[in-house]
Image (cartoon, rainbow, N blue to C red):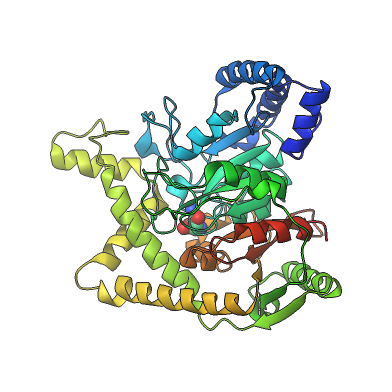
Length: 474
Ligand code: GLN
């Protein structure tokens, strides 16, 4: 077994010195995947293929022709298409579906010699915050197996946490990269909406969905972002701007202005240790010469409802394509067109997904459109304007990633509204499209990881990365 590597730079120096080979590294990760199979992080492991790719990359390393990601062994969330491989978004309705093309993110990573080791468990279609809404069952947190992994990219987070790969891709619609990263003690980066192509990503809510990274180091997040980001003719929502070499440009920080949410320290809904954690970082930042100021965000109570009205509306539209005809699951009891639709969808979708399709259809229906969907769009605009105004005054907004650390497996199922409310701190970046990163900030008194989040200005990921690198050293 090789040692536990915490960054690609460390692996690269191991490759250089001959301490390891990519093949040995992949073997070691595969052993850990087998040992930790009970955590349920993977829906499928691409074992023989990963080993074959490792030999190719080792040869390229020898010849000096290897790409930027040589030695990067990465897992992908089960909603990211990889040609010739299954992708199910952890849903029964995609049973039997094989991707006919690769997502842009996969193509760009492979072009730089990354090795994809498997596809990870997640909440069905990304809908959830605990990875309990998966057709393949919950994912266990490696720090405490009675606790959830977080979600929806829970398998991706645990795969990195338990050292089953170096990094993982997730998708973040309302917090699904940042929240599981914080529950697992990792770095979770959601870039600006429009930075990374959504081509080949199984859609949940298209005006929010972004691919993000779960890594052990800020540097690896920067490197993966730099490889994946940038214009792509398959995604018209991408910004037509150049992508900095984030990983090579990391600079020391100068004194910054940081706003934090007053309520995060005063609200009874926030766990006491989360509050203390935030307070201690505010103190550290002030001691280091940064200006850290409380702000009141007047739309705080509207963040979660606005997000859920819009995300469910978009989901109901996106998920209408699963008809039991074109791809995936078809009910064996279907006898004609109508029963094919009805039975395949009733049997193929899980409970939470059905709830969201129904609510989404409701808010879009003729009599309620203005009262819910149109109003939520207007509130989204207000939230964006207010957030932009705050970011004109300061460099970052500092928030907890989640109101509490990883909770007990089984709780979310009983009470979906509490689970929705737990997204309070992550959906602001999703509604506004701003980049945000969750950073590990130690453990609580039970050994469960805690995380804090920094929200930055649109397309200024470099500043966020620079500050994050400094922040994890505080
Ligand atoms: N928990 C949120 C939801 O269920 C966010 C999920 C996500 O980002 N994919 O919608």
